[in-house]
Structures are given as C-alpha cells and as structure tokens.
Image 1 (spheres, rainbow, N blue to C red):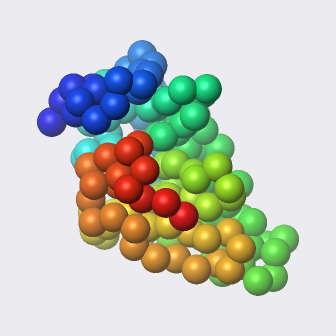
Image 2: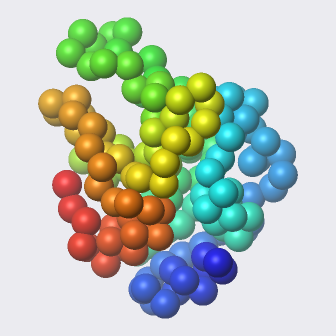
Image 3: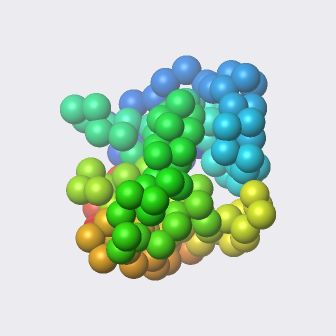
Length: 145
C-alpha cells in the first residue's frame, strides 16, 4: 500500500513529513525493544508522522513514539490505579490523554487490532481491527473517544 496516496484520498488536509531514516526506524527497536508492525513501518518509510490542520498529529513521529512509550511504560510506578502499559506500542493520542496502539507480547505485535487506553479509568479496548481502519476512522471522525 502506498500510504501517502491512501491518506490523501481520505482527506485533503493531511500533511506529511520527510520519510523516516533507517536510523530513526532502528531507534524503535533499540529504544523500545519492539519490532514495528509492517504497516506502520511502511508508513514511516513514506512519512515520519501524519499531521492535520493546526499541527494535529494523527500518527506520531518516531521520536515522539519512543519518548511517549518510554514515559507511559513507567507511569504505573507513580500512579497506583494504572496497570503497566508496557504491553502496548502507542503511536497516536486522542488529544485528551487517551492513547492508541498495538498490543505487544515479548516485543512482538500480536494482532492487527488497534487498542485505545483510557487515561481516566485505565481501560484498554479494541477500537479498530486494522491500522487502515483506525487511521481512516480517526481522520474522518468515525472513531471517537
């Protein structure tokens, strides 16, 4: 799939960045000890993040992905009501504190399902059955939290 073409067909307001470098993509494995799922890796090979009007981030840059995951994977150490979040690879947020990501076990993505983590009640639930379904639904407003 050509991600730029697919995303441009969904919305004319999508903005792209330069493709991620090999070093940036390698920083995910090095920093998070997680292998990217193929579809997300393919997207990063075309653009290092997907943005909308006013700087809205639909898909984080690799730098933000590493930073946010490292933070949220340890947040349970400061907040008693939160179960560990290191079972997810987050790649986007809802702008309200909720996060979107893949489920991971032993550094591997287990399914194509996309989960939402609710920051208020610590619930985790499937919000889309694939990356394509998630990104289209999130951009056009079919998915909301």
